[in-house]
Structure formats: C-alpha cells, structure tokens
Amino acid sequence: MAERTVEPADAAHSMTCMEIWGGNRATRRAITLPGLDAWIYSVPYQQAESGGDVYYVSNCATGRITRLMLADVSGHGSAVAETANNLRLLMRRYVNHIQQVKFVSSMNDEFSNVSHEGRFATAVVATFLAPTRRLTFSNAGHPCPLIYTVRDQRWRLLETLVDDHGRLHGPSDLPLGIFQNGTYAELELELDVGDLVLFYTDALIESRGRDGEMLGSHAFLNVVRTMDSGPPETLLERIVAQVTALHPGNLTDDDVTLLLFRATGEAAQVPLRNRVMAPFRLLKGVAISLLNGGRGIPLPEISWENLGIGSVDASLGRRARQ
Image 1: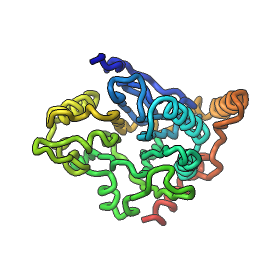
Image 2: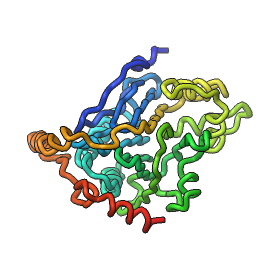
Image 3: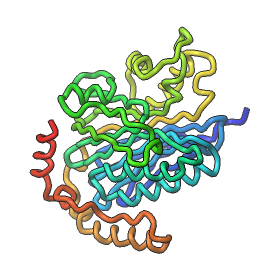
Image 4: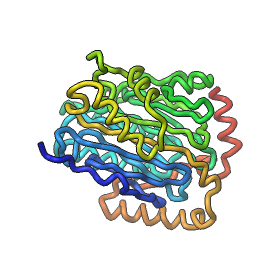
C-alpha cells in the first residue's frame, strides 16, 4: 500500500489579511490567525492526493474576521476538485462579512445547482470575530463539533453548550443541496482564552468501538474525554491513533479530516496599520476577481458592526436573541 502523502506535522502557516487557505488535498498543518491558533489534519481515502473532504480558512481585510469551513462532499475526482474551487470563490466573496447566513445559503445554492448529478455535502461553518472572541456557528447536516472549555475543563458537544447558555436551539439543518431554499440557523457563544473547538468528518463517528458497534457522536465524545491531556498541537494525531486502535479497519474506508482551533486572546484591538491598509487590500482583491472573470468579488458587508462602530448594536442583537 502506498505511503500517505501528508505534509510534515511541523509545517506551519501564518495567515495574512485577505487570504483564503485550504482545499481538498492531504495535509497536516498548523495555522496562526488573529486571535486563533488552528491545526488541520486531512488524509483522503486510499492515500490519494485529494479527496471529498474540503476545508478552508479565511482572514478578512483588517484581520478581525476569521472564517473556518469543513465540508464532506459526495463524489470523487474532478467533480470534487471543481466543487472545492467554487467553495474557495464563495469564501473569497464573503471574506469581509461578519454575518455568515448569506455564505451558507450560497453554499446550498452551489450544491442545489448540481443536485441532478447526485452531488451534495454536509458542512460546518464558523465565523470568529477576534476583538470580542465571538464565535458564530452553522451546521448543515454535519457531525456536531466538540468544544473544550477552560472553565469546566471538559469536552462537550458544542450545540449542547449553547443550549445550556439559553441561546438558540442546536441546528438540525439538512445537508447542502437537498432543498433549493434551505435555511440554516446560527448559534453564538463567546470563547474564553484557551477554549478549543474541534470539527471532524463522519469517518470518526462511523468508526467502531471495541464492542464492534458504531461510535456515533456521543461515544466519540467519550473517546476524546478519556484521552490523556496534552498539547493541542498533537491532539489531532492522538485522536486518529486512539480511534484507529479501537477496532480493525477503523479510518480506512473514507476520507479523514479534523480541524481544531483555540482562542488565544490576541488581536483584541485591530492594529492601526490593518485599518489603514484594509481599503487597499479590498481594492486589490476586487481587481484580482475582476481579472479572473468577476467571480468571488470580496465586497464588504454593509453593517454597523462591520464598519467598526457596531459594538453597541452587536450587544443589543445578542441580548435580543437570548
């Protein structure tokens, strides 16, 4: 069997403003973002160079807004490669938007347009606002993310944590491409410094425990809870090793991807240089998009919060949703 094509574990990347990073290729990488550290582990089925799991991370023109997306796309080969490219264009189009509703709806439109080809996807999307450490989360039929809170020092299902805070009920939204006009809920919570959030694809929860039964989300959560504490830099590899050891054949029949990120508390204030350079970065991004056919033009979201004067508006909005 061919050796898996995976980048070295110490391959690190520091994201710059207006950058979109990711794809559907095998990788194992650390990423530094304003207010976040992130790690990605992705190994396609049968050690292929690329697979059906698509992951992207983006950073806006000022560095305030980070978006993280993990999708499990049906199909293989050129069809997935085309989808991955289209998702990159959508990431670019909405890179300067704090609200992610339009982005998720556009993702659904992307898959609805090719539903006749039997293509659909599950996905999880998160938007992190560095100055407030606010995380907004949407789920389109994807396995529920896990969160480790420093306050409780334990892993939990992310949707359960939000429910416990009296926020919106956890989403049970359908996969992308099932309905043309599908709607997707948003959940919000504020991350404390050191909190960890874990996205993963269904290969983990479809693995089997020592009793031969499929794990599911809750048993997978228990697997993560029983692991020895250690640095987040090695957590993804340790989870893969733990699940692989549970039962013969685990993690061999599908793509395997995990995306972990941790709130660092940095970037509480947007540097003056970023504010000054933001319009020029924006204009450069628009020019590049126009030169490439006009797709994915990264126009800013017109809202009080995105204009940098919406702290009161955002606070009132969060209070109204409670």
